[in-house]
Image (cartoon, rainbow, N blue to C red):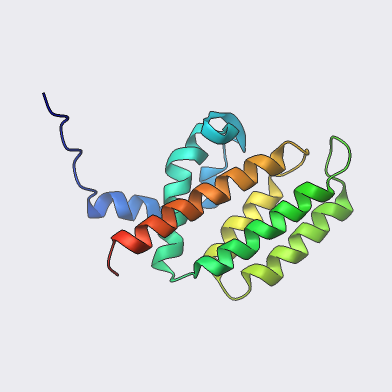
Length: 145
C-alpha cells in the first residue's frame, strides 16, 4: 500500500502564512515540547510563516545567517539564569545592524529577541532560526519565484 500524496499547498495556505505575525507565532512562547525544544506553533506554522515571508520579501539567506550569529553570540555571552538588560540591549543593537534594511527579517528577529528573557530562551531562538533557514533554503531551491 502506498502513502497518500499530501495535497499541494493552496494560495490560501500561502496567504495565511504571509499574514501570520511574529506576535501571533510567538504567543505560545519560545520553548516547548516540539523538536528543538520549541513551542509547537513556533516549530511548525511559525517557522513556515517566517520562511515564506522572507522568501516573499527576497531576504537573502546571508542576512538571516548574520542574525543567527547575533543570537549565537548572545547565547555564548549569557551569564546567570536571566538575560540582563545590557545583554538584551546588545542583542537588539546587533539585530538592528544585521537585519539592516530587511523589514520582514527585522520584524521577526526583534520579536524573537523581545521574548528571550532567560538563558534557556536563547538556544530555543537559535533552534527556531536554524529551522527557518533550512525551510527557506529548501524553498529557494525547490520553488521558482
